[in-house]
Image (cartoon, rainbow, N blue to C red):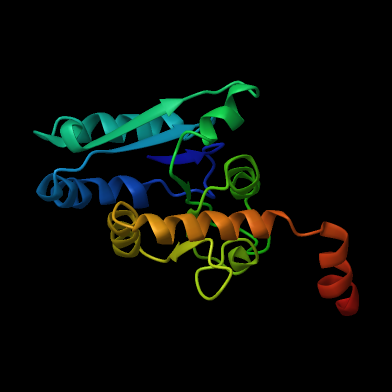
Length: 187
């Protein structure tokens, strides 16, 4: 199960996800897998993507392999729900290139979720895709996203648990110490 929280702004291009659903449906159908994607939030673009998904639901067999649920969660339910899913999904593309999506912080902090995130200038400050601290995967194109979503459904349990452990270690860093070591010398 994948989870994405959003405010449905133009900084988040859900077309990348919805354009990936038909190819992913074919992959998951061949593997006899089922995947659920939960998207929570309110905002101006929500109805546009709900309509786009409504068209996709008409494809024969799609709902047997892939389901997208649009939700609104109360503050109390949000962290509990995060703890019930396997992966976080971040489609945020910072208009400035510098702001970090706080929803990824939520995914790390509330649920130790590994994240599949769209690459932009500053995202690697949160999502580390290589090396010892690997806590997720980054993508550039819809084809990259398709590959990662298909791969995520097959990540061996040991690798997945390592990703979750790395999220826990990342979340345990001290903000003040990180600031003093990394930012203060630049100012």
